[in-house]
Length: 255
Image (cartoon, rainbow, N blue to C red; front, top):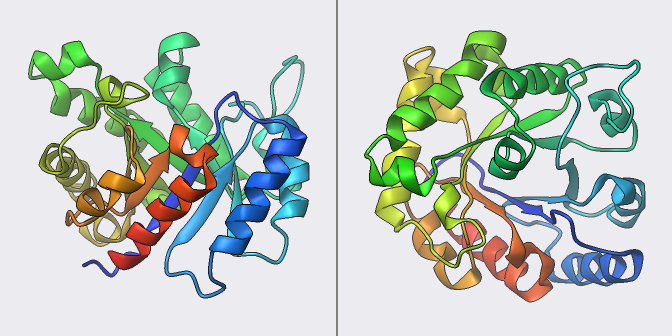
């Protein structure tokens, strides 16, 4: 049990359409109690943000985006600024997801700049950190996670994490069906909190650290029972209402 209110965020990735999105949100609204004991966020593709903002109005569900530009405005064709995300109702934004790092070449420096951009616009960044299978097998995973986290801390400072979240996502457990054991995940979550605590112990104790890596309703309870796991960043399972609601229920019961 923790005094940190858990959060479950659904990362829809490159999935969805208006008909399916409407059905999914309707099912989530029906399944989430008005006095839900966990924060619930959905992060659809950016073209659907305004639609989803309207669909979740007056519900417990909050809106997040999957990415933001590092720049505030200007000649950056195809980019979406953090101010624009806030303007359509976003409260959260995922930054530094492993797929952005791997497929789009996002560096630690760019991720830090994006976190800074989000904070300037009042968005709560969900900073993703995590190691590849090679880094895990080489025993370098804690060093990798510390490096990714400290690159952001050095730019925005520990005070910024009073509003932000960290998501640990072992790359080898995303979309593979493999999941870190609860203790493997806990060990990294504890190191993330310790890294933050070296800058400010009070803020570190309050930061919510999410686990992302093939979380399902069937394994969520054991993961969320760990002392430093404060919810989940959910990929594929967030597209299934029953599965996502099961994860939200497990998070609420851990609080």
